[in-house]
Length: 200
Image (tube, rainbow, N blue to C red; front, side, top):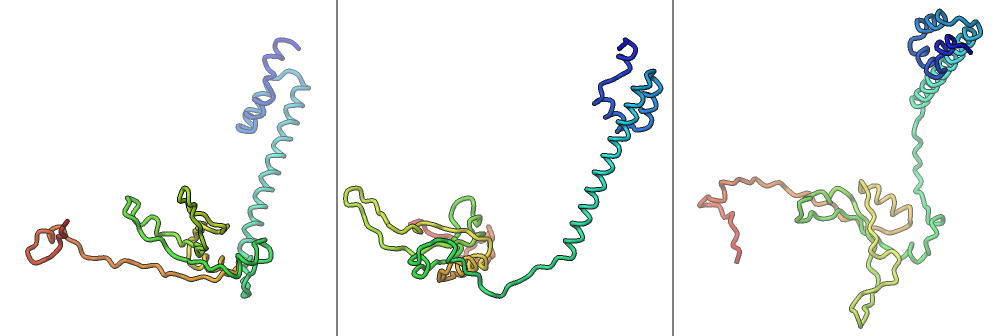
């Protein structure tokens, strides 16, 4: 290959990228500069080949997106009225299904800076079984595998549905919503309002 042809024939990857970006203008310039007919034929065939692949891939992606959109519009959710029971599939012993009772509640707000952050989730814990205390160290132990396990749910209905699926009897403690009180900084210094509390 001569020096002129080596200077004209750019790397194929760079050339094809520019061809796909600028299409006809850059292709005409390359064909005009190229003196070898074989290189011209290769450039033309590669250009049309990659352009065909590009158009084919774009048509497939567009048709697939339209098909997914049509299926999403025509689909409907099927609701089943029967209660789902998965106790036979979980592998949990029968003594931990029929004899267990869970409590569904919302945690009380704490005194930390998080405030009401921990009151946004519904929680489920299990009843406390018999414990024994180590006479040497004073540690308490239990043989309950579900002890100290707390589950969190977004809504009360999700927690109830989960308990019913697993065959547990449940007790729901309703969430207490505090009533907002009218507060004023000036009331701390009022003569007829008992707002101060003694520290004694």
